[in-house]
Image (tube, rainbow, N blue to C red):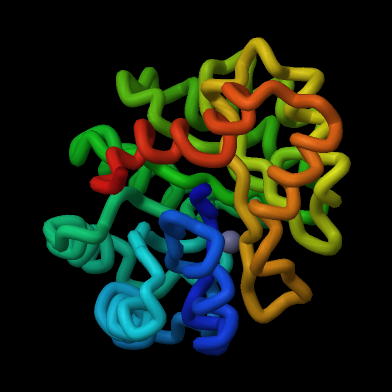
Length: 256
Ligand SMILES: [Zn+2]
């Protein structure tokens, strides 16, 4: 099992150990722990997840991969400089994608930074993880899909995160990956099970995650949802895709 979206820097070692006990791997992503008053703050954050988190994960036997990027709630003033830094960060072995990128309020600045990062994703041929907000989810998801469609990207390795029942359909229609986040305030395990059931023909485009952060979270969200899928009669093959195989393929994870 793989948890494709966590923020390990917000959790204690005991949580990382719990995850290590049940998961084959996790992906931790850049997010918004501080107001990014200067590029230095942003760099400190990204380098923390890139280096310190790797060390902490190793201590408890957690297999940790990383995505780097500018979260829409954490854009430093020096955007172009940050884009150059990202090009260097992706050279590290454990970096498997660009994220979280995306939109929170869909301001002009957010859109510009989102588009610049998508262009970089196209250039680097890496997967991208795109955040959608809790507020106005449908409206902002539509804007995100519109923005992406104007770019004519060849790279379809894009995960639209924190989808709900409705946005899942739109994302699958566009040929992108759906990230289902099982966390208080987002989806319950059973809601995720329902979405997987309803879209089982697209099982190779669905990923599960906990998005565990400093908000109320369930670090065992992925194993818990897998258990609920089993109880609800979802086929083993589909469970294996959404909880493991799709993540290995998309992020080209070097694991068994
Ligand atoms: Zn997140």
